[in-house]
Amino acid sequence: MAAVIEEDEAVMDPSMQALQQSIGQIGRGLSELRADVRDLRVKQDADTRELRAAIDQKHNALDAKFDAKIDALDAKFDSKIDALDAKFDAKIDALDAKFDAKIDALDAKFDTKIDALDAKFDTKIDALDKKLDTKVGELRSEISALRDGVAALGVKLESSLRKMTIWWVLSLGTVLGVLAKGFHWI
Image (cartoon, rainbow, N blue to C red; front, side, top):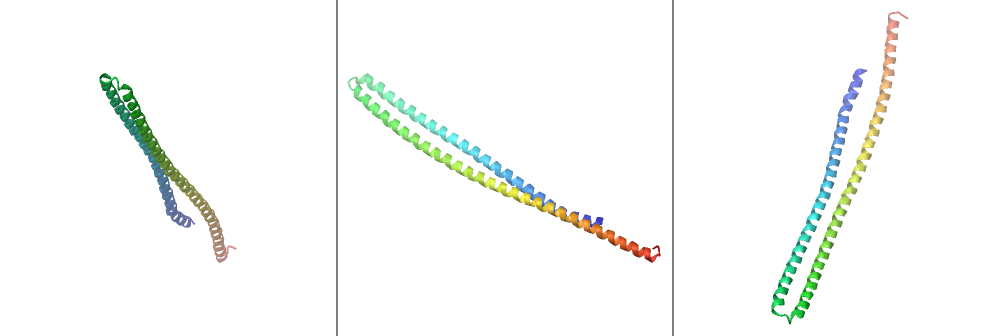
């Protein structure tokens, strides 16, 4: 009887080991997916900050450059030609409005591109998150099915063990009866 139980345990050990290895691999794969999603979010945030900083830097440089040129022109022509001051002020104001319009257009263009990138990254991250949730759900259902299968196998093993015990008791009883009859004990 002990030999039969040891054979069943030896048969079950590799399958349990394979099951444990599969569960371990699934857990590692899930951890890697979560780490990849975190890395993508961190990269998206860093890229967005870098892009905004570059835009701000270029905007400030252009603004400073245009202001410096306008101030230099204003100082030069103020000292030389007072009569044409009103005409140059009008031109300077026109240039300033033109530059402001161009800067505003560039700013709006960059904002649109940044918003598009944000939306694209958000879409990709949402898709990865949904895919990850789907995979986790599938893994949970598979693990649940494996648990049910192992539980059913345990019940079946217990039933087989009971049947074998009854068979051994009946067999030993029969052998003892034959021996008792043979030795005329009965």
